[in-house]
Image (cartoon, rainbow over all chains, first blue to last red; front, side, top):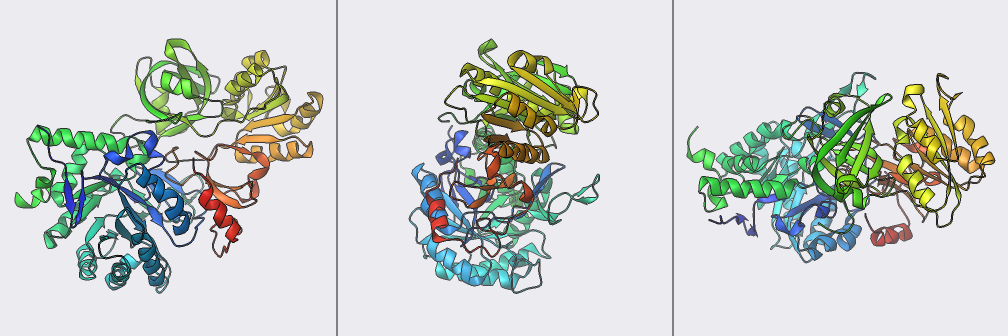
Length: 311
Length: 299
């Protein structure tokens, strides 16, 4: 039996539910040495900003139990180079592209939405709501205030071509992720990606200094998976019709099953791409085998299964 | 998938041995051995499939041999749980290895005189480089240093391959007491060196670059930055490097390096974002710099 792996995220249909998480796959070029980039559901590209960004000083990374802390500070070439050089490469290889955008103001988000959605071949835009919001005290992100997050999503939705779905990427370390999700839905997000890295710190006990420059970093990897699954479960429970891409520490095909059962329609592989460059292909293979072993004929049947069986 | 890019293989351990203060593991990995060029590195998963130590450890390749279809040897010292786990591997255990990674050392077209400078375990990639240079008819001289005698490894091999080999230790327990850069100038003069290759800690590379520049000799340095992925996607191993166009960029040690021209690395600014780096806060950048950026290929 060949299971039907297709999944839908609103208007967007993907051939299978395994995608990459933003910032964990570049534009697919490096991972293409290890597997066929067109074989997975989609590549979510590293958050692109309007201008080139050099990012943060180093050290930018520290290994932590079952995960890592990182702080790259959105290093990237800017949207011009992304659209001229990086995106065309991905599309030329038959890859599907979910383009993550990061702005430092509503104006920048609007301009990015216009430029990116006006480029042929973009399957969806993902809005990185963990960018610092310049109109609030330092360190606060758009995601920290549901109203500000909604303002960003509304701006992107109104500047993007209507046929390009807009996904809101949520932070989990907020007072109420369901409230944030509802605010984004209200602002006409077509789907949600969750979760982003969680802010944390590691201190180097030899130097007694924070292990990454600037102190705080984003925690990712299997360490955050239960937190991510919990967020997906709660949001799916509140909004069963809202498409969700689940992510946070996905390492195996079983993890994809877990996120889908909690309510995700697609599942992203993130940090594990760093440690296992073939991870996406392996996870997809394991997922497919597990569907067949369960006798599930359609991947989409799994979505929200954990809710139907009671708690 | 393609070309001469890196491959990921589960390869059997042929042997694990002690080399002075270090461990050396040889794995059977024909796919990596056949693609390898000196200066490239491998990254090794540690702790098993369900390890809580998620990240691979990057290691310079010390030796490649044709035995069993192709073997690769890398050196390391035990620094934490990951390397301690590696040190416990035994023959026939399987290791998940990715490689070869990074840009190799560029080799001279002509049979020129080359001096190879290594600090501690940074000496490892210089041995396959020495072999490649010798095959091209180059003269090879070594300057190897370390904290103490047991941290200067393969002294015998160095003497065998090279025309001359000079050793330094911080504590004077072997060779000359002092740093590699204390003797490098003299070696360049005596050996009439045309090129310098160096691998080791950043302060050493900075000092080697200064000595080479003082003698008007080009220098290639291989940096040892911490990295999460080694394949070019995590953006954590960046260093400020001046490009051919004069523009400083934060480039990835893993795919844009680890080998750079010494004078192009902004050693004084490592760990920072120089104010004039492309995309630094407040950077305005010329339209020319932007234009080069879009046509510039990424590895």
